[in-house]
Image (cartoon, rainbow, N blue to C red):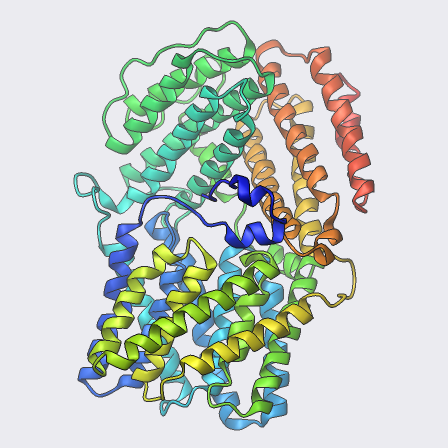
Length: 639
């Protein structure tokens, strides 16, 4: 999670404070072990058989896989690591054969076209962004790195390196998870995190931190949804452990809804109110029985909903799976819980039509234009300079120009600082380490440090710089620390210039596209609640979509606000739109809980909804956005 901003950081401009901000959390020891066992051993085998250059490709694939090896479930990791690796292999094939068969100008045009496509696709989501990054970096490496092997062999060993890390991810148990079925430790931790987040929100209701705890609950639900959306967690789970986890996730949805409604009401709750979700979290982690849960007071609709949700969750846990369908209160448990989980898990599949719509929309076009211009310009400049490592320049530009990796100036500052530090560290090691043994050891140690270094872009850059420079020397090229520094600084200058050029079409397209999706999801959720429909599974799925798209929009807005003023003003006012949408979705949740309890809304609810809908129109107009749909306003008129 992001580190809280210190008092000193608050006095700094946002663009500088963001560059100094890192993430915190426990050391991911399992990922560290996988990083140690990934690229280094592959390189050792390649050196022993005399095929160092193929070992370099395999270690490069393992390095990229290590960067994408984030916390979560094992099956989700296959998708998160595997798809970018396939894109990287394709980039190696295209880049290698293009570099061998065409001249400098056609090659630059080809790379620019790849940048346009990969940049547009990157707007679809994090996995697509990783795929776009690996495609472009691998294409530049394939076109410029002088290796004797043909393109298909390079791609094959690149995939072998990534595949080896996937095997480690699937096979190695997480420390501390040996007592249970470690195959599902990522899913268990994610679902337990949801119950912990519910308890944290309940413990802070009525306090200043309630808003942050509600956002943390959304993040926990998003993480659990992704963790459970693995390849085998389809419509019909194939094991009891999978079915149990799905049911436990489904049982958390009404708890989250009740907790959000109580936070909206704003009345502080007794400390014992949070004890039930805490015990449920412990039961998810250990697999033990929940036992009796402390019942909250049933004095208000939110507490009555919480009490009902706790009872249903306890029944689900104690039966070892879904409870029978058709309980007295009409809650969609049992088969209904399975239906809820399916809707929640599969409401956002990466369908081809949805991906194309995002990639060709305003956000994708702006993204693609920026990436293509920076990537193509860097390739042209690099080939004009006739540098032996010319491929470093466009490869560096790819990491710098990707908007989803952070604000532009923050990326540039951290990339420059990290490269200088990493190059100096490597130069010192290269002067004393034996070759190739010392370089191989350096690759293994750097691979182990990658999961820790991902907490800050400068630290990640420093570690990756050491790793790449070691790979270059193992592959037979001369030591190139100073050239690496020069290429990086030149790429920083190119990206800074291109990043501040006026773009065709609407400015801030990615932020506006995310905000538009969040607005549509919020209105769909509100319209469903006001319609009086009794399908709670659909309601919870729509609620998940509304909060998730809001979180994505908020993240894009926060990155935009941390840009230099020249870029930040392009999305001025969008943060106020997002804040209004968050209040609207919170109020909608409170209305849903109250309608379940009383069957009609109070004047407080209807007046609050009307005020927020009017405020949303005003905020959108101020931010230069089109008016939202008025279907929810018509539905509200019925109350």
